[in-house]
Image 1 (cartoon, each protein chain N blue to C red):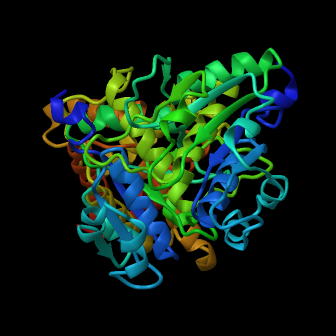
Image 2 (cartoon, rainbow over the protein chains, first blue to last red):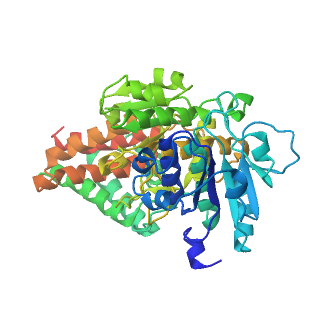
Image 3 (cartoon, rainbow over the protein chains, first blue to last red):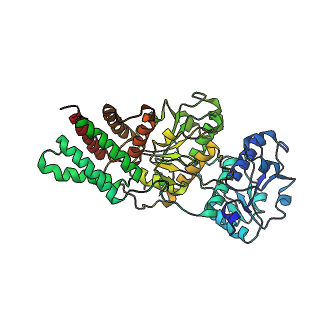
Length: 252
Length: 252
């Protein structure tokens, strides 16, 4: 995979909106596409004609996607150069087609686009979705796992999820709570320094009372301050806090 | 995990929109939430007041989410009962917070919500996103891996991706080395109490010097103490520590 493709800005699936009704949704789709590196938009018989000012307004900075959109008179023409087509639908069809949820669809598409296939995802009109004869032109079903009690998903939202999963599949690097690396993690010595400083200050106050509980009280403090995984600059901050509180007490 | 939760209709993270500007985006957020089984919406100072007819129109069939939205005068109040908060942001911050991409965030949230924690995801205003002082109130960063060449993502789109990943994770939740144990997690209110107590004690010492740096010094303290995810008993321990240090200073 080239660097271009890894950045999400290489070739990607075409997004084909079949008989879209609202310009706002076309614009939202364009913006969502570019958010995840997709640029190829095709429209089949947009209800309000083309170009559409509302589409341009909703696209925000993604005007290039709108400006380069290609318009077709029917779906067959729009997919004539495509080698692999997925149809978005929520409803069950009497069609013997493989069904892909978004991550699986994205991997399927990456695999084919890496092999230089021209791929597309079809989205139907807002009100009714794709007609069965349109779905029948596809190689597979792209389905979004919505709440069955409220499955009416916005057209722009469907395009967004397809684009998002496309973008994610490009990197597929899961970061499980990785820290922002600008801060250096404290060493155990840093933490010991903070604990020692605090315990010393607390001794002066009579905090460790009764004396036989001192050990467990000290351990509790150490436990809290150890498990936190402070950054070094946080340790400095906290030592400043302890210093301020304890120095004043000594009458400075 | 109960059947309710598996269906995505059990408890989920609260979605908190901070100073949202356009009613349409609030409505789109509500619809996206319900598409993936989320229902708890909170608004902090919505620009155009509340209720908002445009929000209702865009929510389509998700009127119940809009009708049950709660409105707050500031973010601190909106998250006072929350035990774990993620802040959505694209920009890098000088904050020592863990960063989660959507799938990792969803698993983190599932894990905590299964343990009965109250969780929330914060989204900032359309134009500028969350302010740093708002991000500083969170335990982690929720970040969406957008195309760096076009990262301006719509507010409703951000909420959609969070809700979508929440819904997807419902099927594949598994515990991963997290340290949620039997201790009850502190609420944001508990942390506020500790921060207030400490700041008050520090004011008496002259710690906040020079005065023009006070705000940033105070925020640094708040950031450290928030991200730690204290248990309630740890908060009590630390308030005892602050009390000991500051009382003695007052000459007791």
